Image (cartoon, rainbow, N blue to C red; front, side, top):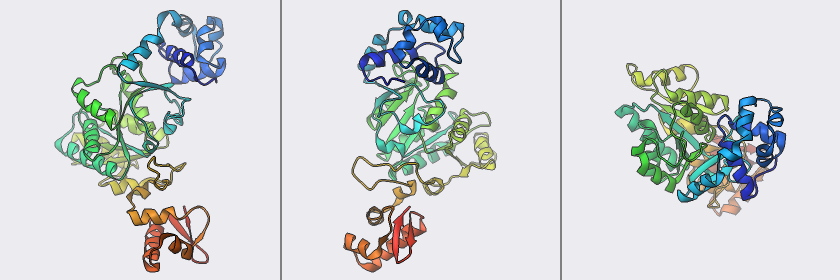
Amino acid sequence: MTEPTTDADLRDLIGLAMVPGVGPLTCQALLEHFGSAGKVLRAKTAELREVDGVGPKLASKIASARDEFDPEVELAECRQRGVRPIPRSDPDYPEALREIPDPPSILYVKGTLKPEDHLAIALVGSRKSTPYGIRIAERLAASLARVGLTVVSGLARGIDAAAHRGALKAGGRTIAVMANGLSEIYPPEHEALAEEIAGAGAVVSEMPMRQGPLSELFPRRNRIISGLSLGVVIVEAAPKSGSLVTAHHAMEQNREVFAVPGPVDSLSSRGCHRLIRDGARLVETVEDILEELGPLVREIKPTDGATPVRHPAELRLNDLERSLLGCLDDLPKPVDEVIALTGLGASQVMATLSVLEMRKLIKRAPGNQFVRL
């Protein structure tokens, strides 16, 4: 597949993605078959039908796409509203999202996505939330933000909005994933919240700019919420809540699933209780989340030059613990060398190394040496 490295490539990809019926998997199949979006749009109907999943009606739509859709109008709308369309091949496209089975062909982004957003937790729940749910969602989101995790949610009424607000109040980063295009905020009363989120993170969507909020798009949106995250926390969910769809996507994507328990007589908590019965981790505090998350597939290098993160539990370390961890690497290092590097007393270094060892962030090697896990 040819990467969209030029404006023309990006326009062609936008034009292809705007064709009704061309979802992420079909788009990927077309690109792999023809090599570029431009070649797809120039292909004849018979050639398009050679691709799996492309029937006569869809082939006809794609063949007439150059006359039906104007990517320049879409790009002008993006520029007007401060939105950047990021194709899947772009280095700024979230790596975690690229790895799910059906990543968006294009991610429309208002705000900024940063490397540290790979350390993200989704927090979602019922639109018809209770005061209990709002309180817990805000508290958990704030705690996640304070330890350096980005909070991902869906900008919906209820728990989602509380999650975004909790992260913002704590001075953290948050990402809102919308089911409709970014030309119009839904629900409309969250327009000011969306602007605040864009200033401290990003508002994103896979939909063309002027796509309205259709009911069938919300379950599809939920796979992006989980795809951007290391795990998903459900705070209040009725038995048929859309939040359970997000939990299902998380399981399929090999993400962790967490659930907050509630009153046993509350309908809003029955979905959470079912998840817990089925094996989801029960969550009371942020420590429950950090303890469950395993080592990262790849280390995350913060933009501020801090020690690269290999395990989310490292986000809870104090300055001394973080400094000592930064002195260690994949090869065993004698404790005398660690003491020399830090300039600290031997007893303080040994006590701190013991804490890191108990937290399973380092291990002791023969000869009183230590290695980072």
